[in-house]
Amino acid sequence: MSAARPTVLLVEDEPAQREVLAYNLGAAGLDVIQAADGEEALLLVAEGAPDLILLDWMLPHVSGIEVCRQLKARSATRGVPIIMLSARSEEVDMLRGLDTGADDYMTKPYSLAELMARVQAQLRRTRPAAVGSRLEFQDIVLDGETHRVTRAGHEVKLGPTEFRLLATLMEKPGRVLSREQLLDRVWGRDIHVDSRTVDVHVGRLRKALLLHGEGNPLRTVRGAGYALG
Ligand code: CA
Image (cartoon, rainbow, N blue to C red):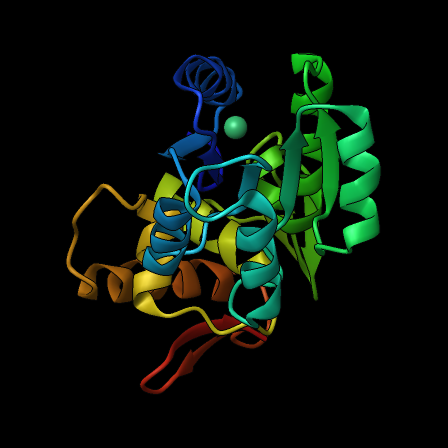
């Protein structure tokens, strides 16, 4: 498994289209959660923000535009990239004009290859380690492709969980992640492990990093979680 697989929320009311997209996103190594309407989409986002949202414009109950507006208006979800899907190119022009805050737009019928490329482009911005990028923080270098970590030029041997933990923290240094957020991102939201497990693996990661460099880069934020730097 690579660094904590990114989760994509796919919001599309037509089952056949949803199925094709879900299959292709899964084949690209992404975890997919699905919603058939806007209301369901908002509920799923409230349960735990996905890494990216593919959002159909024409949806029953709450439209894609409304979902987009609501998510971009909240600080907790503003940073989640949204790619809007709509039926015709004139609609895309209109969507752009509506200033929904969406990060990208695609017109149906779209090329799957093009859509997947745009998904990867958005994820490279928000989840760089998960899509194979190289990350640096102080004297620590993490290569998302080869899964190698070095500190001050020395190789740091990490287990797969510690690697994913470090990758998740290095994607946004300074940001505090709660134990629950780390469980979601590192272990996956379908796996139920005790939150103390997080502490155990953070301890191992910290120890491994301290073997090769000066100073502890992994900060414990009392009552909140963990952060890098
Ligand atoms: Ca639709």
